[in-house]
Image (tube, rainbow, N blue to C red):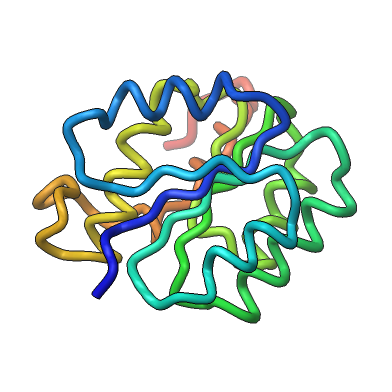
Length: 153
C-alpha cells in the first residue's frame, strides 16, 4: 500500500503551506495541483488519499472536478473549502460527493482536524486522529430556528 497522499487543489500556495506546517511530523505525501488533469492523474495509483479542493476561482470547472473525483475515485475523501457562505454551493458539493464542506462561518483552522480525521478513516494506522468521528458523516449544523416571540408550553 502506498503512503497516504494529500492533494491540495488551490490557485496559490497559502492553504497548502499552512496545512503542510500543521502536519510536518506526518509521513504523508503532499502534492499541490493546479489542474484537474494533474489531480486525477495522481489518484490513479491506489492508496489512502484526501483531496482538499479550494473553490471560488472557476466554480464550473471546480464542481466538474468534484463530480469526477466522486465518480472515478469514490474511495478518495474530498474536502471542499470555500470562502463563500452559500447554502446552494454547500448542497451541490454534498451531492457531488464531498465528504466535508468547510465554509463560513466555520473557522478555517478546523481544516487540519478535518483532514486528519478523513485520513484516519482512509488509512487506519497512518497517523490520523485516533478515536475521532469520521468527518465523512458530519454535515454543517442547521441554522438556528427563529424566535417566534412567545415561548411554547
